[in-house]
Length: 453
Image (tube, rainbow, N blue to C red; front, side, top):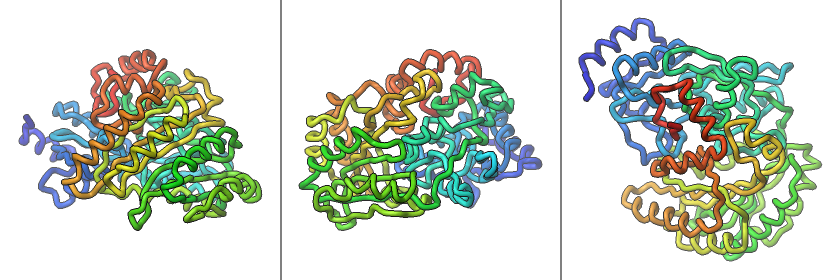
């Protein structure tokens, strides 16, 4: 039970030095601030601490301990399971923390924990630089990086976490620590894939690479009747890709509600090399739309945005596949034929190249084999459709189980994925992560995450 008088007293005391905003339920900005990307999540924190700097984060963590309020940490608020918020607890909201400092000569950037990939790319692309980031530009850099970070550049430059040089962490006891190869290297190992288990990541320093501003990318769409052929072709194409080229595929609906099969391409090399590398994809079949060509790198990172609108109701299921077999393809096509929502998708992300040249134990993220991640994106807008949409997601996931590998991608775990799923997400690195958790957060204060206990 919340002691509202103690909360009011603490907020009054803290407000004299807190540079951000402290929002309670009767504040006019409270309802907007408590929303996260997934409209299915409808939680009401006792207090939202909208931080503007590291000192605010420290104060928020200490206040949560003082009042014994569960602490949730929000960066971009994109997590499908709604881990960024909490009922009757304290939301530590980093979204006002938007500082970005690019060092073009050193090819590095320091960005605060509330930055999104759209904001990040806008600043780094002024200098023709980028690092692996989210494929949906409204995703926050914090959650994506802490969970590993699949993205368009991963074949050439690895995961977002593989490009992390340091992170500024606020621990549960209020300390401010740098996690890097030189300072607290064990913590640095853990934050590269271990999620928000060890503290609040207030800022990140990344390695940058010469990318763009023009790259080759886009989508080709085929009729659903050819979906099996498209996915088999996708398997053939991804069997031998250059590092510079990333290719995803999916089953989705077009604007008119018709079901389609899609291949999405990104090539981060020269435009001439990109044109040559994508020629095979463009020449396949009779697409209903060919949108592959030269484009701004920032625009490439927005091509999926309209498929993931803020406020849509979301329920995700995901797993790595043992192989993209004929049986797996046939099952996906059959299941998607009965998909009840035009906003729902079956999405395949292929992993190869630089990601696979990092050792399983070199970072907390263990999934270093070439292969495919399967994501079932269940989305809808009418709450009355929830039961049948979620049923389709669960039934499709169960139908795909015979084709799944043991591993899970922690960033895609949803509300009903339990401790076994977290263990699967970390595989052989889980015991070491448990030891690290005991060192940096022995009370498991930060537990509203994909929790390492």
